[in-house]
Length: 239
Image 1 (tube, rainbow, N blue to C red):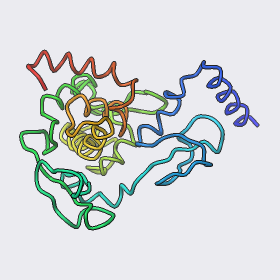
Image 2 (image 1 turned 45 degrees about the vertical axis):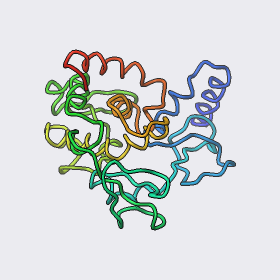
Image 3 (image 1 turned 90 degrees about the horizontal axis):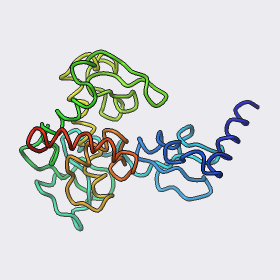
């Protein structure tokens, strides 16, 4: 009964405009999903517990991310070679789907081989998140702990393919934390930029993805975070 009352109150607040549904659904957004009612079709799978509101309002996470993990781990992203140009080289056998869905691996001069994600951008994200001052430390933020120099959450650590031995142990090491961030950016940065209509991700896309999850670069609530990163980039001569 208590859970029902909480859900009912949340729905009422959303309807009245007193609760920002974008903020309430952030857990779903951080996984690259969209909150919707299960009566609507979902091209991926519905997940419980990530959306505000009624029990039949769930997080639709599209695509087959697990099937693309081989490409992502190589620093690439999967796309259709018939309709998309690759700034590097296409490799077969690393992506789910038909034979034309191939892994684009390319771009140099970037952090960890991720096009548009410079070391300066990585370092500015680190600075804003506390960097060395937060090595091995966790802080309570948005209903869960954020740990380490980049203030990484458990779900973020899972999505960066769990480098090291565990989330909290990785947060104690700068090198492991950077490995996690780079893998996360390779996984979600380029795809988020494409959602925003850009052919190539920039530091703004990566920073907002770090702050808001896989679709962070198109979420308005990450703009304030980007302003802080941008100020750092200006100070160091650009990202």
